[in-house]
Length: 368
Image 1 (cartoon, rainbow, N blue to C red):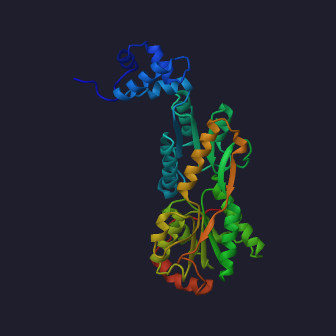
Image 2 (cartoon, rainbow, N blue to C red; image 1 turned 90 degrees about the vertical axis):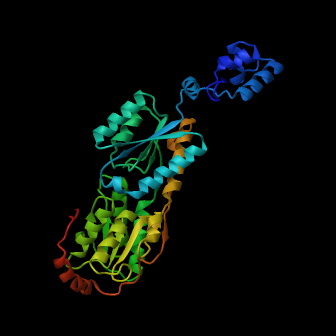
Image 3 (tube, helix red, strand yellow; image 1 turned 135 degrees about the vertical axis):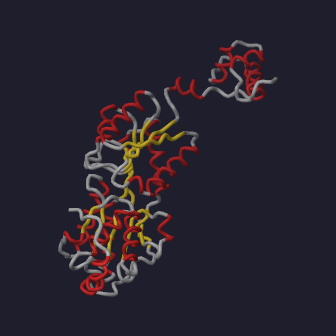
């Protein structure tokens, strides 16, 4: 019985050609001290026999695993956040084009994240890490810098110097969102954000506040709520805001998932999103196009972001200085049907909601 294709060894090639194993190895590693005739016969035998060099042996020799890693921190509603699924898909697509693999795992606490990093590094499972959902003070980045282990961050920390990152200008984006809503005639503009240890959540809240301040609109803590960043957080956040004595006629949400939840809450309360209450999200997720009404959102392609970060990490592995690989991009407003001019005042909206909210007791809590 003939040997299965793919199980051919370098010894088989050497015996087939009638040369030493070391000669075959030198040809496969592009040494120039082998005669042209011998080289030709060995390469033909490699093709005829279907010999494929061991990826494990090749990677050990050059100190690379051809695998990148990402550890998803479970919490803050991340497990229900569709942005991360799109982002990881973008990473995987980019790596597939380069013949590389992606190792994805999760961690349920800060200590677990660091323990997982230590284990994967010690076992040489990956060549580098992609860090996502960066925190204001991020222990993952601190540890990787301490270990001098390659990584790229999707997002920044309070101090973004000294490492490679790709991010969106969150402050400017949400200041633009506040200005846009004010230009439509909204004077009571609410905000649903995420936990403030997440740096993007802090930046988006600051941008919202900066936008209102520039317009001369006084800060009102009753118009802000912080929630886990999934749809359930959006439902709870919208109910909290709409229960205020002077509820917002427009809600700016830190993620599309929060915005989709806010739209669901409005519908549950008998409100028409885009007319009775305007809702705007951020992420540009494909699902937003199919919400009723289709979601107005600030868009960055999660897939493109994943691909860009993956390619940046390859650059780091190829020797480029991490501090020279930093990019800040702008998000684009995509208007659909979930935003528009207010059709009633805050006072009128409060009157409409009074009985409905009493019929449906408030769930969810407000953040400070």
